[in-house]
Amino acid sequence: MSNNDRPYWNMEIETKLNTPEMKEFQLSRLKAVLRRLYDNAPFYKRQFDELGVVPEKIKSFQDFAKLIPPFDKQKLRDLVAEQKGDILAVLDQVMPISVDDLTMISTTTGTTGIPAPYPLTMTDIDKVWGECMIRGAWRAGIRSNDRALYCFALSMVIAGIPTMLGLLRIGATVIPVGAEAGTERILLMQSLFRGTVYCGTPSLAEYLIEKTPQVLGKEVKDLGIRVLMCGGEPGAGIPEVKKKLESSYNAKVFDAGGGFGCSCDYPEYQGMHWLGDDLSYYELVDPETKEPIPLEDGAKGEALITTFDTEGWVMLRNSAGDIHQVFMSTCPCGQTGFRYKIVGRTDDMLKVKGVIIYPSQIKAVVNSFIPRLTGEFRIILTERPPRVVPPLKIKVEKGEGVTDEKLPALEGELKEVFHTRAKCVPEIIWVNSGDLERSTYKGQVFEKLYKKE
Image 1 (cartoon, helix red, strand yellow):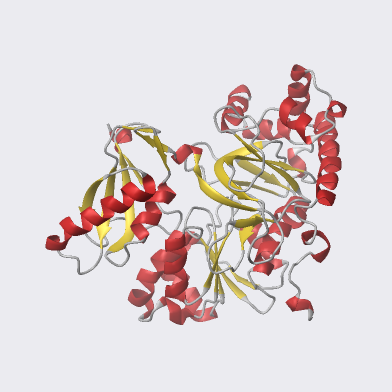
Image 2 (cartoon, rainbow, N blue to C red):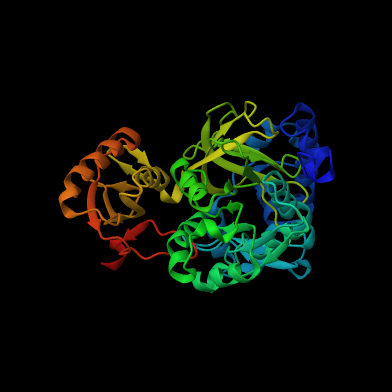
């Protein structure tokens, strides 16, 4: 076996993922990080003291879940308010190092509120976040002779420069065009430098299917891209979207995000393999009660992550608001790591007559009707979610060549599939192909009319 043919980037660690041996290692690392935070991070020392907990009192994962509450967006908001909006003061509270020791400050996108900061040192970028990114890239078949057309936004978000720096370790050539450049610039750079790998959101990859013939006079499959590394939003894990991208690009699609994971190249999507057992501890909790949910095949819950060896980017039972479904059995692909699928985000959850619906479910249904539908849609909200007074209103683009005479029958089919797969019958608002605005950043799924009142 040549060095490039080995199955894993880190053969020593990745062969031990999700094993009893790894659990013992995780517990020792967890105890170490609790002591480090207690001694050096004022917020956590205060929290531990208020709870009457010292690090040595936590002797098991069960103790950890019982004694330490999750850190979620509300706790961040409370801490920001306590520090009178001074984010640097907030960082000094939660980090075991000084703000002056940071290499980079990145953030979440902030699409649902205040952007959460990612304070990073080079150790965090290189040996933690970058290490997991490169493990996923290696499993996706990316090697040093590849050229990566880098289309994640480069402005602030962790999927941008921090992830790109991690990818550089594999030796691939990076073409850092960024989503901010727009589709014409992205396609120009691709025509000049002939990237073999696309890195970006699945919605941008879908948009490039439309734009490539207009800008370059060729089909997207003629660009020479053989691997699409997608993340930042649902899409690559939705079978209908995955099929559309793979057939259009004649390439393999890999899903990454929601933590330290990346999907495999098994033909049917199996979820993302968790690749960071040595770097983090993963949990599921009930999104309302925060009670632990055992990691068993098919279990669903809010994902919490605790990091071990990070310096600035500390997570202690942190929640990003993602609802995961986990699978602990061996993947048909044979590779290591338990698997998880992102069901949706707590911020995006809708309740229609008591039925919980996520935008990813709607996207899956709409994409199953391509080419009679373009795949573009908007969920119309007239009041603040999650409660939606029925019917759920969805604006849908009809495909090219679909006449008004065909709409009643198409609408009937669409509603029937929604009823079967999402347990709701929405009101369909038809618009023409191209009417809904496309994005080079993240795909827009909501029209929040209540904000305009």
